[in-house]
Amino acid sequence: QVQLVESGGGLVQAGGSLRLSCAASGRATSDYAMAWFRQAPGTEREFVAALNWRGITTLYADSVKGRFTISRDAARSTVYLHMNSLRPEDTAVYYCAARPYYIMTMKSQYEDWGPGTQVTVSS
Image (cartoon, rainbow, N blue to C red; front, side):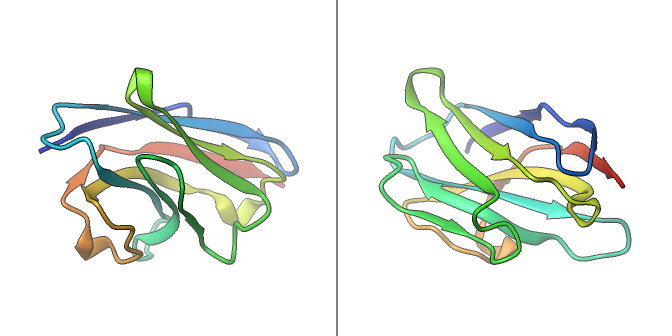
């Protein structure tokens, strides 16, 4: 079981940038996959980006590829999502998620979730 808490959300103009953070604690294994999902009102939660804890493998949704970067600071047990060139359609609650070992893109494959942080992009 991993406890996750997101931070760094806020309101930003289109074309701007934000960095989200996900602080993790209480993990049972040192080898986890970490991911970011997002959910806009009235929509299903969708995959955004993921990495394994070593940071060797990363995966991005097509909608954010080239604009967002996922990374981690192992010493601080923190995962980041650097978001550049933000668009109004990026507006959503962003969630951090964790599962053992392997990167997956379906929300049902992740066991632990943070409460989310709101990102709003104005046009």
